[in-house]
Length: 467
Image (cartoon, rainbow, N blue to C red):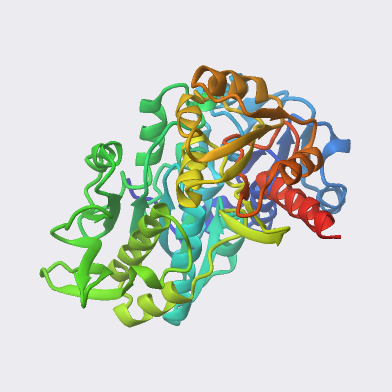
């Protein structure tokens, strides 16, 4: 599906009656941009006014922006469009009523796509999105491209899109929640990194979750590229929904075109095979500063995205070699009394936590727990023995993880009330050469506003250990 974009679409927004639902980062950004473009905006959130950012409340009052807090709109039929924040379920009764009344329901990502004429490189998947998106952003910037790194990574897409000139690149991390509300969104290059169970409390089934992810590429055409994980059968199945040129990447085998590992001079190299079958050697696998097989996959994906977006192999290789990784993703924090501490607060699902365990390999004291999002923790439990010396639990769903661990025969389990107690207990348990790993396998929402706050608190607790 195609839509008017850029200046043409901006003209359509003038005086349009728009309800923005959810006042998180993306919601506030959508309200601001829509107001600037002349729309008649109303901001809505289920929280009461005293729970909304007071500075933003003051701004809206000054600008005469409508507000509907702590309740649903009295007349939902008054709105021609609803813009939903990613955290807002799409099947709420008043949202369905708006649809029935003829309102278009989209999200902030779709709005950003329409108001700009930017090029989008968009990346999704259950895990690895932030690392891959950040690395692609570094490669694009190293190539001298006008680039913004946005989306689920923390920077609202619509803010950057509003200010961007035509030809600008939006390197965008996109979640299943953002993709659910896309209509016309069509990146120049898209990528699906992997597919494992997550957010089933929202999507209910893996099929629905996968179909949401597949929306990243459903509008792409035969002149655009979809980068896919050739080692993930679920991803390959989703790729069939797109008309884009399919470009696989693989850590385990050679592909006809795309990214893979090959041997050169006795070492493994990240290699790109182009559309004509020519091989381009990007960098040695041993050059990577980010650890773990999953990060090899992330680097392969980033190399493929960048190359098929038109960036030369030398620039890609240099940027990959220099990339240190991202905060909260198997991030080395400190060494205390011969014990290394790693912050993997972004490990918000079972698969991510298992990936972190496999990256650190052994002698691990694992801190886990939080909001489990209706996950099955069996796989996590089955990966403890032989890798984890002790499991330190916190948060709402700690009992569910403990039950799964004991069922798998793992009994070295300690329950704590908060992060400070977890770090203290881990330090007591640690022996020289051990690794203390925060990889919760859960969302943070039961105790923290987001995974960043959880990771920063973990690092602060370690700092206090250092004195």
